[in-house]
Image (cartoon, rainbow, N blue to C red):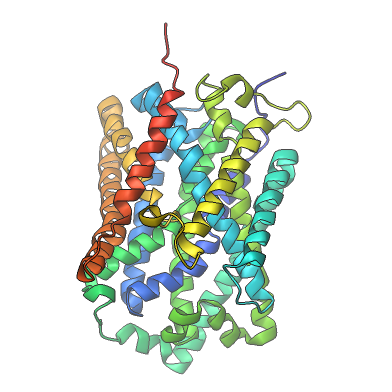
Length: 466
């Protein structure tokens, strides 16, 4: 049986993977979070979106540069191997497969179910019905990607264009409505008021930027299909640059339109649905909200696409548990079905964790209950830093802009995101808990879980000989 995936995807699919995976639920429910973290101050929120977008673009430019040099099985793992060696690449792939990808994917399945129920007027977003629907979406996405990968690719392309409809309409119509009513001018001239835990403007921007990180995350996942991408060394860098640029522009104009469409107090309390109903009426708002659900499902599809190739990318390097089994490609559907099944199981675990840690009325995991949609960004950006440093060492003499300046900016952006995430989830929660005489620092307990995951993964590493 041939253990190679065919070159089935073109440049358009790659661009749609970048845009389609990133633009999804995050921009809809994290816009509410950004408003909350900035106490409804729209200009501070825009600064947070700009910073988050700049970080994404700088890191994407660095990986685009690496993409012109290296192509093997899985972009992120390939680049880690080329710069830092086989063990670092293996542990990076292990982290992405066991923690990073499935943690985000499970949250997306829940968000897709939540918005589906909201579409039908239900406010039950944490109970049995919502979680059952989330599990159904997870299994459906698994089945489509594992058994009909070409259909999954076409679905990714079509949903990418569909999901831009509500964002662009809200950006344009919301801005017009806001300017006509004076709401936009009022929001842009409102004074800065201290946020939660007494944060000043700088602190609020830090916390809000971390909230944008989930909305911007996912672009790196597009690199997982580089072995299936036609002319990958040319098309993947183009897809990363075009896709990330489109995302930043769309997010910011949508956020401005959203703030003009409805009072920020209502948006902070009830989310984007208020703006859609206010601007487009019940029928129009409901119709556009269908596209929001489609947007979430498109993102879920792209995340699952990457998930299913995780163990395969390790197995192809003869690493990880049962590498020969994980690297096996089905001759019927030309997909690593064994790797896909493992991905489904791991996703199911992280969905249970997300429910128990974040949705249940009483956290099931005690001090180990953390936000699995945001905290993994601490470690993913930390993993980028040594790779960028190594690029300077390996290729610095070949071009100052691409191989020195860009990596330095990428390092600065990554350090900023790590610090911002620690600040938002560590320092601020710790200060709030300390004021009540108790200890709570989710970052510490997340890092304990991260270290445990990496220790287990290291046990499966097979040192290269010869």
